[in-house]
Length: 296
Image (cartoon, rainbow, N blue to C red):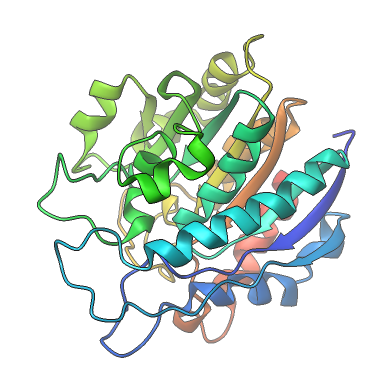
């Protein structure tokens, strides 16, 4: 990888439901936990600081009100896009230590300002929930791929009049389980996709398929989104929605390495790992090992 790397913290938990009423999701501590494992030095990166998110406050939100924390997510996405855009202007490869999946709005907005970019969506769920396929929306983290491809309320999907941030033809989704609730929406959109089982069969082949899709001449590059619940629940239980049937660390590393080594890849965000569910930091250490190996 020719470009120098930077690590930027984007510790937002705004798009997740509370784990218990009266609490907030702990994924905002992801960046601190991975920094404690030495991720900045281990990947040879410079420290790009932190974009501090607004307060998590659902107020009087109730089902049917749309996405909760929407105004805060929108304002934060613009600030995150400003910071990421400046780093990309400086020819940096951005490693964004996020919180939850709606953080992807920031990078994709930054990239849409620049041109036409793709996204690789690595997740145990498709995150294609919309008002058209479910009774209610609410948690933006479960709607993130839908939002960045222009499906959902305009105050999130059409920031700066740039909807969609990613075209359906320029998105690839990998890692969903066989019981994926919104697979029909994914198929109808024509978004290329690999289930976790298909990826497990041959992670290198899956990566090659992604690169064939996203290293096209008409694209200016692509971004990788990693929700760590793509890993099997027995391997990574410290997430809000752990599910069996996922990848192991070796398979994730084999999938990530060629994607991140591509000259067309401009950055990655990592989300959903919750240090509150990992008091001994066992899973933080294993995740950092995998990321460091994939970026080596």
